[in-house]
Amino acid sequence: MKLALLSESLVDETALRVLVAAVVGRPLKFASPGFRARGWPHVMQLLPAVLRHLHFNTDADALVVVADSDDTAVHTARHEAPGYFHPQCRLCQLRAVHRQTVKNLAPARGREQVLRAVGVAVPAIEAWYLCGREAAVTEAAWIEGRETGRAPYTRAQLKLRVYGTDRPSLPHAIACALREVERQRHDPRRLEHDFPGFAFLAADLRAVPNIH
Amino acid sequence: MIASIAFRNFKALRSTRVALAPFNLVIGPNGSGKTSLIEAVMRLKTLSKLPVAEGEPRQKSGGPEIEFTFNAPHDGLTARLGCISDSVCDTLRISPAHAPGWPALRADLGGLRSYALQHEAMAGGARRDDGAELSPSGHNLAAVLAHLRDAAPAEYAALTAELLRIVPEFVGLEVRERAGEVDFGLRLAEGGTVPADELSQGSLYLVAVLALAFDPEPPCVLCIEEIDRGFHPRSLREVRDALYRLSHPQAHGLSRRPVQIITTSHSPYFIDLFRDHPDEVIISEKHGRAAQFARLSDRADLADLLGGSTLGDLWFSGILGGVPEER
Ligand SMILES: [Zn+2]
Image 1 (cartoon, rainbow over the protein chains, first blue to last red):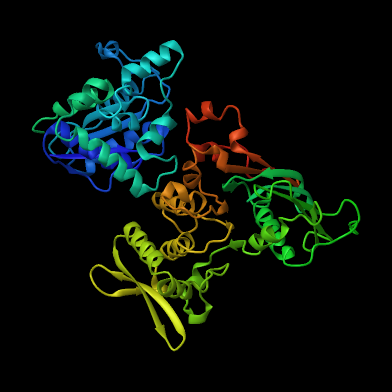
Image 2: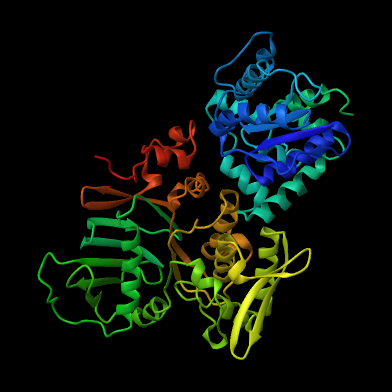
């Protein structure tokens, strides 16, 4: 069982490895070094190439991709209906690119396709880090804020709360992120409950054969 | 430190003013005034060492002029450089004349530093007594490291730890002295040491940037040209962090006063790192033979633009300006 990870920074990658292991219930092997994108549009641009590379050149079983929602539409249960696609939802967009890419690839290395494990952090991955520490930080709170036109917090505020500064050094940011995700290491259910965008990632992971 | 610089008829900077933040990344095409900005700062340093000019300016009107304002505690003080030509500035006037804060400001200005690091220069050895302050090309890097090791062992240890964290294939920094000469190398995990003249360009630039970042007595303003030079794009975050250590010491748990940074880059990957701090990016734009500065954060539609692209790509595309003119 081998996973690959596409993220925006070493901070995200380090924390996501912990969160993925928390869902699966055991440490996992990750392709190293991880794949890196430079922000949202770049994740979408890179995804087909990363999937193609993993499919033909590696023995990876699944690709973990997590993006920040920023101010875009949040993926809800309604989007899960068969055939539904919300053009402004990043989770729908990532799933669509995965689907379209892998369907055109011939089987390779004994598998049909590289599976997806896609999540979207609302509005940013720092909100996931704060889960269990700040009860007011939830996906529902963000959605309500969007609907009422009063955002409960900004992305910059979330970063400040996690890192204590708006200019953290890389080692400091990694240490802060690891300290925060430690709360989820043995039981990610709270994170899945408060952040459906993480629950969709967890569901994808649990659907990977032989992952447990 | 420096709050703003206004230019009149200085090289391509015909009539423009730039407000400076604690950290300033200047991006733009060649010849758009990035280097002229740094040159102006260094002329201020040179002229601040001379007696202040009194009386009326003797330059003919319309000649090059550069005017500096400063942050607290020197707000209200203006320093004006008068130039005979683009290459010769020969007078410094301050206002108000005889400002009581001038001696202290002048002492700070005397310590301004500017770098155009050269890996060929840094790869060679140096004389042991040529240490303490890194030279503009970095040619005395080995001596600076030797000086730091002896005079500030805590900073030297922190520099070494940071270096080895960033380049984990190495396990030690070695500074060797022989008969007044000094050189350095990096010890490999598998044994053996790579001398400076065999290190990659990126490793040499990294050691130099860290030597500046861990300087126990940094200047109040530090200018570095082409900061991305020699670095792998994935390492640029570490380079930015090293500079932030100087410009935002509190964010790094340090209590010393901030160092104002003015740096330039042509790397979209480095520029990407300022997505959350567009107030730190200055775009230099060239129209014909005249160049102007603008703050990226003054761009009202920036947030919307960033929803669909990276900052570096926006700059490369030309949407933000600061790209070479084409026929
Ligand atoms: Zn959706």
